[in-house]
Image 1 (cartoon, rainbow, N blue to C red):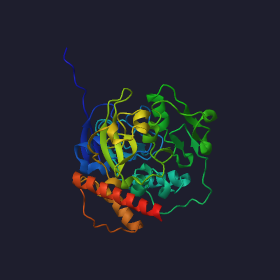
Image 2: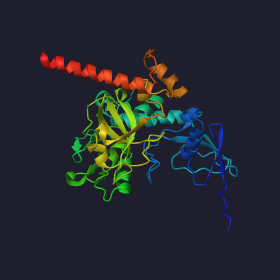
Image 3: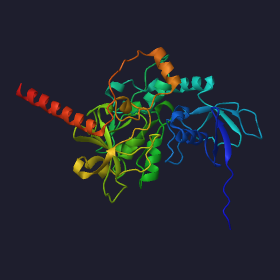
Image 4: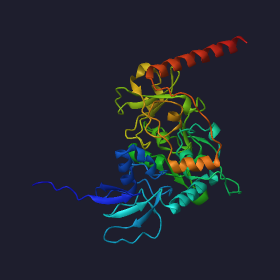
Length: 371
């Protein structure tokens, strides 16, 4: 018997029409548009809790709210309220408004404000700074002031085993780390305790998270709540150079990103796609114990797909610009920074500059020891 292909559904997203398979969510449809045309990246709704490789994520942070102006071709009525795009499936003939709808942008300002109510403003000392989803979300959709005057919620820091530190004060309760532990480890040892304002990610009786894939909770955390203890306070991410590498690992795929400071590997992470999501999780041996170049086969510089401080720091030629509405908001609220440095895109030049910087640092250390 011949297999019949499923009937594709048409959806119009911010004026752009795309055909998708039944069961596709609005978020996935928007990503499909961006994957076909990288200039449309800014159309994709932001995601703080949704993580496509993990089942069950989405619908918790409300960062991806959109307006459904037309439910379907059969029922042209609009949905009465904004809906989360990450868990709302498309209908044939659906019309969705995202960045073109003022109510959506205003709602996202409110979501940013609520997320920042208890979140500490310690970006200058946070290891996640520069690759933090909340920073990007606040920059693109937030406001420069706050109306909150009450005392912030605070928690003590906890070590979850030898490699991970939990700074619960920064947590936005996206549940990504819980889903990760549920789906890629044999036994989850942490979860959400208590309710309401007292809810927190924790382990019972301070039990350590010590399974071989526990380090992946660091990669999926969108903020600086779960950090790598071996990398803490070592460097700012925009001063490091990421390269793709692999090794023969009996436990995982062995495909990673190495982060260099000069000639030193200061951390190892799983590879992420253009939506900053890990497709292949890695083991703790690759992440924490293999930090010599000789341990790896270097494939070449990591391609930075989306706008980030790494690309803005003249790393690689494929620098992605922030969306227009975010730039307009930033120009109206923040002091502009004039940066007329030349782009360094040649791999040999990048490598030579790294060596020179490392030699200068060693020279300064020698002088300091003599003095």
